[in-house]
Image (cartoon, rainbow, N blue to C red; front, top):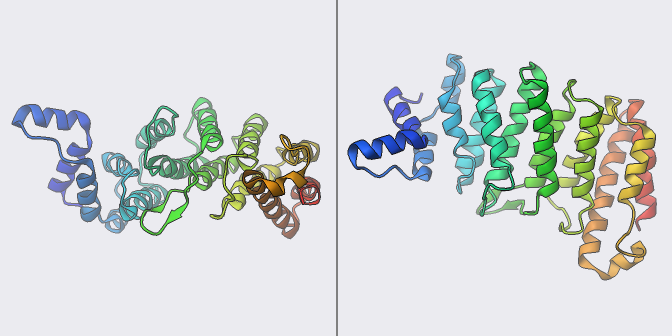
Length: 307
């Protein structure tokens, strides 16, 4: 398990206030944050912490500071994996979850720089785990929950870094991770019709984007899942859904979809919309839930309208 002395030192180094105090008191330079994450990953035995069953606070926040790390083993395997496991084990206190909610929402702000594109996708993915804890055992107030819907929706709309998996860098996957956050929110019984429509608008804006490449990292299916759950819960009517699909199927700014075959960006948009419609239609056809049948006319409209 993470040794107590090492834990104190690492948590201190992860805190800017503590690092500043240490620098003033000793004349030393604060540790490189990446080096601190490497040490934290090497010293933290999450399995032992889960077995002990003791709640964690500062450790979770220190781990979250590693979500933008360039090393995929630290960013994905350690930071995300550890936080997901600790939250699912019920070991992250409510106060710490609220701190994570605030900090990670800030990471998704347009003002937050993320030049390498690692931080925001993994902040969104951990926020999906924070949202899951509220779905399983509600602790957010209405304002916090609605704010998280807006944070997630705005992020999905804004993603313009479409890098998915790289053999050296590992995953970024902003669209899919943002969709995972919206999926957890769509499952929450405290989310109502107004939030459902906000999620619908955000997904439509991303899947119909004329700036996105042809998605190859499962983005259409991941984007379909929030729509499926919101529809299954009865929050979206067939008429509303069909109108939404029809709006996605509009060829504008092209005069018709035949023009797409002369444009790389339009071909990518065509590909993404058809892949999304297929994912929705398959799920809505395989499941006998009556509410999911509401999705079929709209999905079929895209597939029959876009060649």
